[in-house]
Amino acid sequence: MALHCPATILLVEEGDAVLEIGSAAGPYGPWGGGVDVVAELQALADLHRGERVLVCVGTGGVADVLGALGRVAPSGSTRVRLDVGDDGWVVLPWDGAGDA
Figure: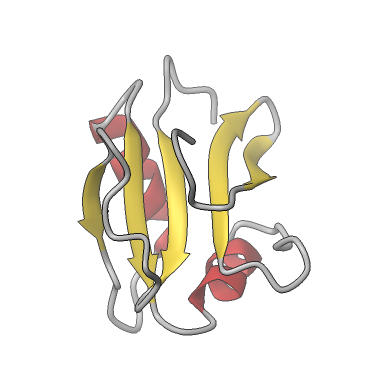
């Protein structure tokens, strides 16, 4: 999954106070049931190469999305930053403040 200059995905739960992050595209989501989350994230990363993208998911959705990616959220986190690494999506802590 090596993308040239991939986007950074800022993943937050719906209802979070973070609605806009500076120059971040979006927000996108939440997605309905039956959506291929991995494909959606990949498409956003490809569409917004080199940008930051805000993606909102339903309550408890951060853990669900990360589970679909084979990753785990930092304890109790409802905001995470996803970057593409050599072995797929890398989950990084993000407090929602300032530039991600």
